[in-house]
Amino acid sequence: MEIGIPVKRHVVTPIPLPAEQPQRSIPNPIRVPEKMPEKMPEQVPA
Image (cartoon, rainbow, N blue to C red; front, side, top):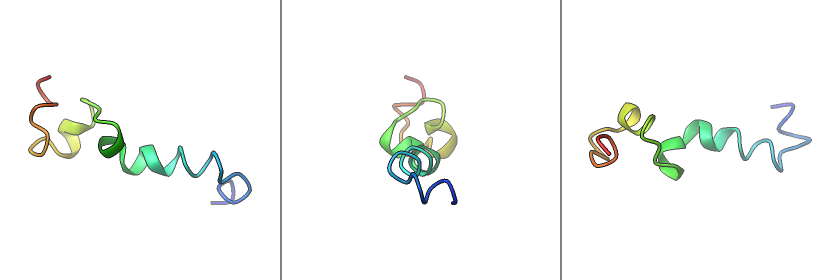
C-alpha cells in the first residue's frame, strides 16, 4: 500500500485490477475455466 500511495496513478490501477478481475475485464481462457467455467462455457473449449 506504500507504493500505491505515491504512485497510485499507474500502480494501483494495473495491480489490483488484473489481480482481482482478470476474467471480468479480460476473458482469459486460462483463468476463466478456473474461476467461472459454468458462467462462460463457450470460452473454455474455445
